Length: 356
Ligand SMILES: C[S@@+](CC[C@H](N)C(=O)[O-])C[C@H]1O[C@@H](n2cnc3c(N)ncnc32)[C@H](O)[C@@H]1O
Image (cartoon, rainbow, N blue to C red; front, side, top):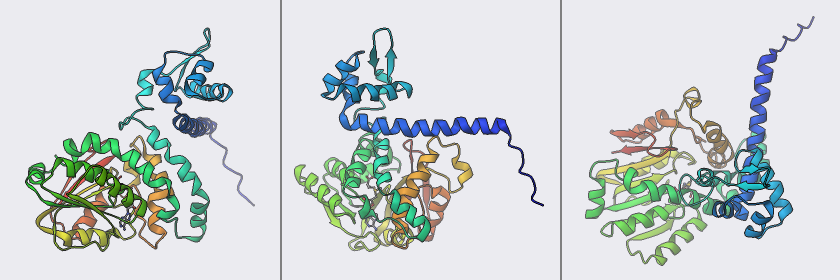
């Protein structure tokens, strides 16, 4: 005889219903935020005082009916304030700070990822069934630009004051002149900043992505940089001679097909006394430790939809975004590094590993 189903704990059902509604509302608001970002509504609203939907639409050059419905979602989502008596809408400056501008506070660079992740969703679903994954190429042409927009403010705010300042004397050595490689350099913005600031050092950026390297080269030539160049190269096999004094990897190890091979290549390519600077997502290798991270669902989502799947697409290990500091430390040691210093959360999302 089948055992009767356990009676539901109605309080638990209620609590989870509330949580589900909050997830659904969050997804809905994110979608509307992405529309607002694309059509410039946040910039428009940040520049005007409280205004009716007709004024907002006119200032933004958009259709009033759509703007009014969008404003409805923004008001209900707590993004925009509404005064019923005057029929006016206001984007408070404290909210505008998180929705506009080229700073790391602007969280629309994250919500901008969702349409791209949704585009590859059918392929990810197929990978759940068949194994394998979705290759990097499937995320182009948008990926390079989105990554560039997300990364720039991070480098502007942290590169010199935090990332390069963490290891003793590194800035001094860069000023004196050393040979540097940035692996998985993307659009090369970070190399551009370093090459301008440290004219005695030489920089090479390696990335597999043709659009990224094309953008990096054109930026370097626009800036007239003589000490920076870029190569399309798989960083599993980048040249180890002549050796480098500093190798950097910014957000570029956890999604590798064969991260162990890359780390070992880095070790081989360093001069005696050379240094590897690896910035990667701040997380623990244990799921239970990550529950307290405010953005932990985002980490595992972006991992499933991008970072892990691009690795599995080529038979890789699929470390995932939340590979975490314990696994990172173990892998750095296995690659031959004997000293590893961890600077936790050098920015809100990342930790820095200094390996020698
Ligand atoms: C998440 S992005 C980070 C880009 C850049 N460092 C930044 O901070 O904006 C990772 C980059 O690594 C590159 N990449 C992944 N696997 C690679 C490999 N095996 N060889 C070279 N580049 C690789 C990708 O093309 C991508 O540009």
